[in-house]
Amino acid sequence: MMSTALPSPRFTDPRDAPVLRWGILAPGAIANDFVDSLVRHTDQRVVAAGSRTLERAQEFARKHGIDRAYGSYGELVADPEVDVVYIASPHSLHEEHAMLAIAAGKHVLIEKPIAPTAAAARRIVEAARAAGVFAMEAMWTRYRPQSDVIRQTVENGLLGELRIVTADFGGAAAFDPASRIFDPRLAGGALLDLGVYVAAWATFILGTELEVTARGRLAPTGVDAHAALILSSAGGAHALLSAGVDAATPVRSVIAGERGRLEVSSPFWDADTITFYDADGTLVDEWADTFDRPARQSLCYQAAALARYVDAGLTESPLHGLDETIRVLEMLDDARRQIGGAEPGDPA
Image (tube, rainbow, N blue to C red; front, top):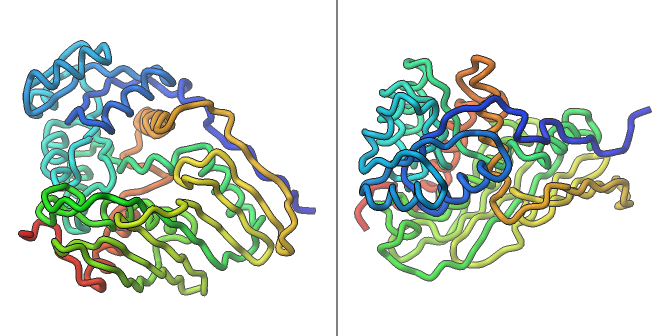
């Protein structure tokens, strides 16, 4: 008889990963949280930081106890003591900075989205594969314990045949035509800023062979301010997704199959609880995360996963491979064109 208990997550301790030496490229807000999470919860070593100005790199290095600071990205990637470069610049610059690090023979962890378009993502992937270095998009939720609970639940058939996945991610951003959110020259728009989360969540659960139908609303600068997506699989399952920068939404997910459903608490990409109901709506089981942390402290899991993969001789993640990363951007490209949004890099 099949157990109805939710499985326990694997790889729950980020400290058990082999230690790599990290360089931080572009010490902004997400880099600050990433390094803080590594210092608090892993044995990974952050040995260098690089910025466009030496002063900013030095300030970041002092804050986090990092030994070396560089006033250019070229100096950072040339550091022989750096094993892997975490690329935390705006996504409009990811391709340029990833290529710089890959050319220097460094492994790379590139913030999401890995690039503004599928074409740019392919160029990064081709370069990494040609160089034989490890490359991974920093889709951090894929490596959290809650995702492994969901992964095992789906693979074990506890939900039966999947029918519907829902996920939303919306926030209300004040309109500023010069901001990275609304400026097409900076690859603005809801799809790239937040939609990458919901689209990657759908491919995580349903796979990558999904047809895209999209509707949305444009901001005055021509970028998508809101996008509603239906992703359809050949087997009849659907993902109902929304992403927007013009209204706050609950940021939850439901994964429903013929035998039951999982409700993933908000925010679904960093959820504390997963609740399992059977097909009649009866509560069956609940999983709660025991990792007591402020927001974004879970960034440590992706770094630990990368270190394990590099130690094993892999060149990409088995949980979120580069072909899937490209496919998600293909879907976002398709959705943007259906909505009529400005292409990344277009003048406002």
